[in-house]
Length: 274
Image 1 (cartoon, helix red, strand yellow):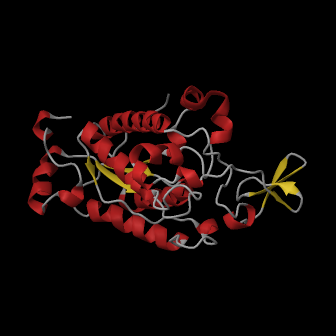
Image 2: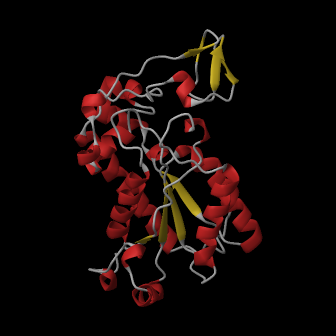
Image 3: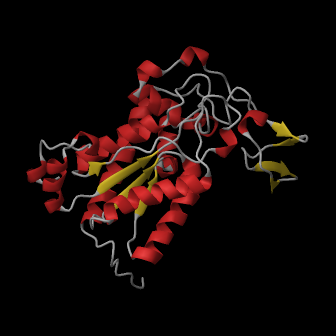
């Protein structure tokens, strides 16, 4: 982080327009956190976007970037069966994300990093970013937070429980919530995940079923295969300590990405042969 930015604000929502204008002379990287408002099992708050928001602020403080307000709603079509969730249609999500990005590009603020805290957003983020590159010539980077946890860290944190702990209702969201939002957790309500079957065959999440070892794609809804919201993960091995390890890794990794973006020109990446 530059000495000029020590003690500065890092959340865009807390800045006056004059304060933000003064920061622009340093060509800061802008972080765009994205999340979802959906069920996370009976024990964790539905507003998982709060995790992406908190992680983005920590990354900003660590790297000197600026964290924009979080988009709290995502593309979560298969969670519509649970009351309380708020889902955006795919076209709506693409339009909102495009408008968020262009709000910065309109002012030649083009060092942007999307921090995606809802994995199902990923394909739509790619569509938007490719469209912006074609139309405006700017490459916008993105990181899928939960997919950025390496296998080695999973094994280090959970050992033999690594496989069963991973998934919706389990980790990483449960452990990270225990670390960042402990006052919101209801671990007394946590339930074990149970294998689900559709048409007599094991499910592959909400993507379909596995027949004779081969996945057959089907548009399944979460409530059809996991009425309790425990969609494959087991919260039993989750812990505040595991959540801290995950958050520390993500902040360190993304701060490194910020450093690279700060030294790069998003309008001229200068690709070359290996």
